[in-house]
Length: 75
Image 1: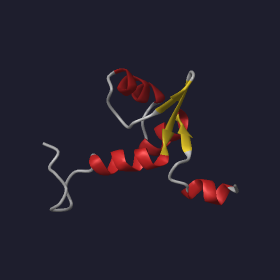
Image 2 (image 1 turned 30 degrees about the vertical axis):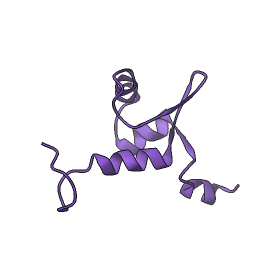
Image 3 (image 1 turned 45 degrees about the vertical axis):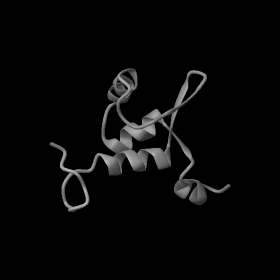
Image 4 (image 1 turned 135 degrees about the vertical axis):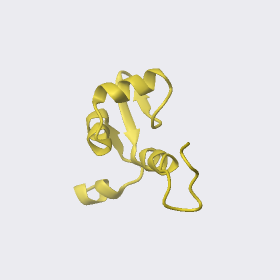
């Protein structure tokens, strides 16, 4: 599988560092969310934590506020 197809694969597993960069958050914030069962869904393989791209995109969409009548208000 080449890098271009990996970039668009909805099932690719992203590292904690990559997700923190995408969301412009610290890794510590992601770790805190996992401990509180908050934030995007994640996959744990042994001690490794990964985030499926499709789950991350779904979580972002579910937490997007305003801009569309179909979206819920975040208040």
